[in-house]
Length: 231
Ligand SMILES: Nc1ncnc2c1ncn2[C@@H]1O[C@H](COP(=O)(O)OP(=O)(O)O)[C@@H](O)[C@H]1O
Ligand SMILES: [Mg+2]
Image 1: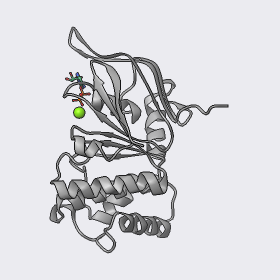
Image 2 (image 1 turned 135 degrees about the vertical axis):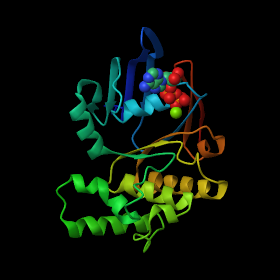
Image 3 (image 1 turned 180 degrees about the horizontal axis):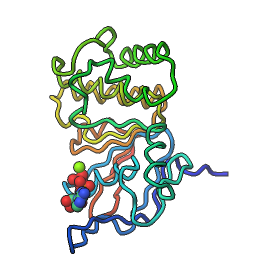
């Protein structure tokens, strides 16, 4: 029996309304991503990359069609169920890190764990473990404002993996970084994919960043074109 793909979009329709005006983004979007894949999504500005990521995150709902992740049908859930599902099953990495400036690195990473019934000791052990994993062992007391962009993004990644989700969604994770820090972050994502088996969907406009993925999909005029699959 063939296993259903980890992520499956079927016949997804999505648009926005601006007053009277309908803005269609996707009329019939289809996508299969197997578990453990590392996919880069490229496409011109306005092609719907963020909209797609937001639908996968369950932040936006599809107007029609099927959005299923790991067997869960996001399109059949209400908003509350989707956000509970999101908190338990995925980590999100943002272009501008989205760290809280009044919390130190460790406290930022701890945030998603506070939503769960995990004893404080275990929480702190997990924070240490993921900070260590992203090369920030011993830096937990530092505040984001005093860190470089690359270090802040490592904290962002540590926060995204704190709950040990199967899926990482990354929206331009290297968009605000210099080349060396970008390479660093991409190496880290690759490690999380290869060593820990995380499925990664990364939106990027940078072909160098995309080259770290196993597969690149180009989004244009509401459809995907597969560009490349690494050997
Ligand atoms: N909340 C919204 N309300 C109305 N239009 C939106 C909204 N979000 C995105 N759009 C429009 O949808 C299209 C796709 O946007 P987006 O997904 O952000 O594209 P990308 O990330 O590829 O640049 C754009 O034309 C954008 O203006
Ligand atoms: Mg975008």
